[in-house]
Image: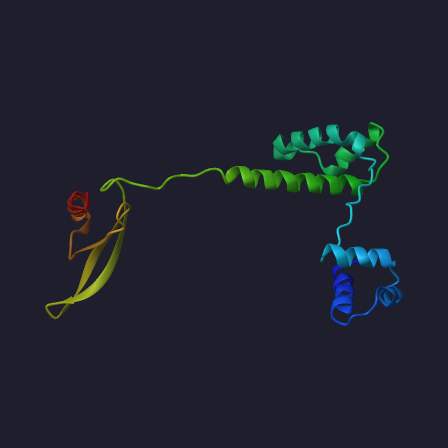
Length: 198
């Protein structure tokens, strides 16, 4: 079988080192016609027909796929193992090995997984918001020195979803009672920012 490395060696011998086709044929053991074909067609990687071999499972593929589909939708504790499915196929006249059944099931699951991934790629959720419609909110506690005294502050943090504007509102005490006031203040500012942008 001719691989990419051998083709590149043949091309180098002929085009760079100017070795004759007869000498290349002696060195590689290939016929001159094969070497000439690769040199004329500018093929860098030889293409070989894909090998297809019949399997004993071909005649039983449809009922086996139905069984695999049924097992994926069955409750977890009621699912049959591949050994059970292999035994059922053998009862129907299948003479192949368990390994062939396991390889087929593995390949089938891979295809199902790829299809599920490609189908989920089509989902798109638009994350756009009108001005003042939505924001992110969080509380934190921090300390600051106010008038020479260390004071505990309750800090409200807002990020507007439309403009990505960021607000910090700090309160020295009664932070829970001031939450509605903070929200109203942020809404007022976000609406005023929206009216200036439109």
